[in-house]
Image (cartoon, rainbow, N blue to C red; front, top):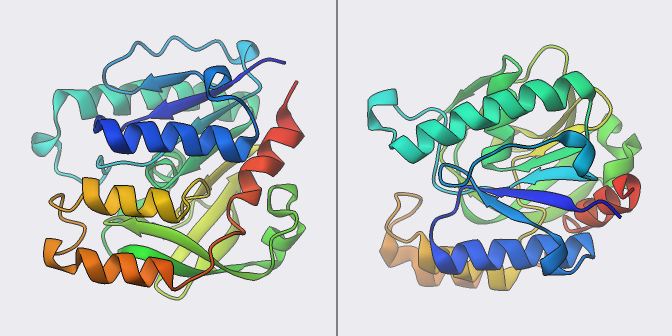
Amino acid sequence: MRPFLLLSIRAEPAAAADEHAAFARFLGVDQADLPRLQLGVDPVDVTLDDWSGILLGGGSFTWSDEPAAKSPAQLRAEADLWLLLDQVVSADFPFLGACYGIGTLGHHQGGLVDRSHPEPVGPLAVTLTDEGLADPLMAGVPRDFAAYGGHKEALSRLPGHAVLLATSPSCPVQAFRVGQHVYATQFHPELDLVGLETRIDTYATYGYFDPAEAGTLRAAGRAVDVRHPMRLLGNFARRYAR
């Protein structure tokens, strides 16, 4: 089988390791069989035909940052992703971006990414649209389900040619599709409770929440049963492995 490729913007060791392990676990592949590139550091010389599909995780980069405030690594990651998405969208190649991935694909495709719809770190109530219920990526996921997330920016305006797949009360675009095989979610399909708590610890000083609230956020995460979002990764792997 041609492997899947994970693109990561996480430079923080604990969060990066947990993300890599979680994507592999819920895709149903060995971690050694899910190569990881750290954007902004590693060269991104990707030939699409070498891969079954590409996944992009989240992290501390945001597209709505002022350009002057972006680090060289962030600017390099954005440039590399832009060129890669030119290929991905043109070929309608299997792609799934989470959190930072929805801002990346949304911005690339002409949507509006801004800070009008932030959500706190922790559990989210997500609702599939009719199109989402019918989409193969969402097979086995109920219309209403809990997920973990947490973000400063989101899509305020969906690209006109995109298909809205999921929404939430405080964030209108939780998932969308371009073409038939290019996907993005605002929530984290790879994130379980252990991963959530790792990220609370890792990003306590990154402006997502008041560090004094960390205990409250952990308790809120433990109070909700989050088990449906991971199905997206299993569905992605079964659909696109080749």
